[in-house]
Length: 493
Image 1 (cartoon, rainbow, N blue to C red):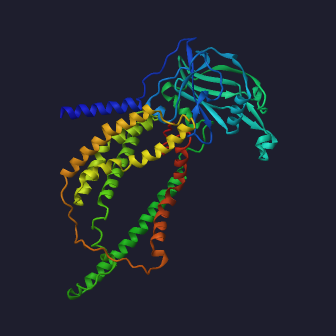
Image 2: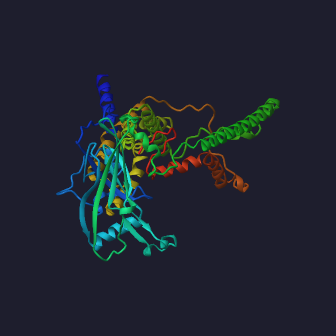
Image 3: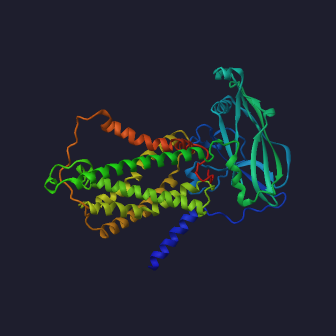
């Protein structure tokens, strides 16, 4: 018992350490203390999953090798690659204009900036773990409206304006903007272009914004898409539709059962042996074992594990067990919780397999442990290989892959085996509540088109889909978007 309690404490501490618990206080500054600007990544705004390191574009660099910041597991998963930038900012010191560097861009670097501007690239920076975004440049001209992109003008934004909000001695908000008056035309890609990169700093008092609430402003950030509010109309529509479908189905079933019971009460005893009709035709087929017992049991176990993982993740996020606004905290917590709930998946899969009287419980345990991770790993290797070949920061480094693999083989798989042993030993044979036929009933083939499998599958899937399609659209848009959409309004990045 002591070992079990200690193991649970270690596991809980691991979740907290990996996911990130909310700090009680932030960094406190004195006047003129340095405030560091961290450059992270660049990429096309319309495809947030395609990101690259900030200095893949020829921005101004610090002297010597760029200093990389330490990254947590979740930050690697979301594609963060933080490096030190040459911007020099000190606490409460306003800067009207400061020259960062002067560069002469050769045609190759000019083309890199021009291509990035055409693809609507944005950049991401951090100050005190607060993200800020801005565009690299813009494309202008009447030719752009006509679809002639090659003749439009491309402008680079070499000047950045940092607006930093503070409350007493803490940084509570950051924002970066560009000055359209200082844009530089880089349309001519075949000549060298002289660029002067500069910046300005403005400190704005924010006494009403506390450090603990500094992430709240990102709910309504103008840079991010503004269609992630709670969609009450679609929620009410879904609830009403589900209630109506449930009521209709209940009424139909009750009428059918009432008619069957009335008819059976009127039948004489000598007529009871006649052929059955209605719902009693299939009562002997309901509890017959499926043909692929091992696969069915493994999928049930994997599904139960995913449901428990989702419930625990939402519970931890709502109760404040970890900060959803911390970079990559949700992904880290999801991986850790999935590994810790492997016991449930193994237990459910082995329990059902034992009730089905399956002979190869070892193979069933392995199948349960790999039912979800195996397809996910295949897709991940394909996507990660493509990202790695393109030099994208979305590609996970090898040590991150090794950490996830170790978490699976050293935590998830052993817990699945332990759960399978417990489920097998704590379950007996399945006892059906009615007689089960050994031979399946023959399904008639000469039936109307609306009673055939394709039509039934379409109608069975269309009704639930019509109840959730609006919210499903925003969920999918947020999965590949800049924010994670949540029903309760807890914004997370």
